[in-house]
Length: 102
Image 1 (cartoon, rainbow, N blue to C red):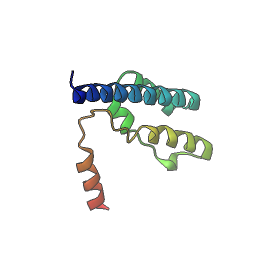
Image 2 (cartoon, helix red, strand yellow):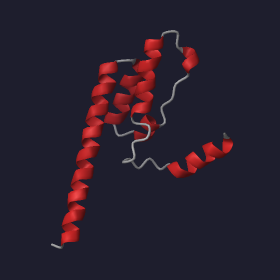
Image 3 (tube, rainbow, N blue to C red):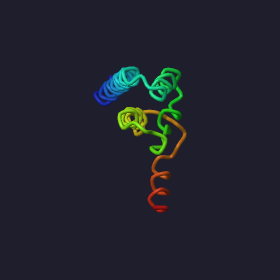
Image 4 (spheres, rainbow, N blue to C red):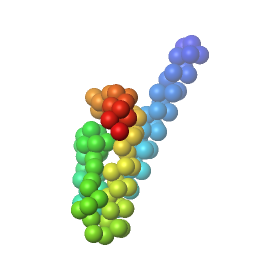
């Protein structure tokens, strides 16, 4: 095995490990928050519905309690930019469009 191939395999192993740890931490946080939204995102993450997780949103005007808003905001934003999932969305293009429309 070449040095480059060994290095590539080591990176792939590391990347899978980081991805798994990140998902485990997110699930722990979602479950600890225990809001309807966080539990819904926990379920989506467990089922592999990554697009649902990264595209989750909320309307601040529907909240009358700042603590509830804080918890749901954390739940929405926690994995919104996680780079390791193939969601079928061109993130660079979406970012450029949002920038141009601002």
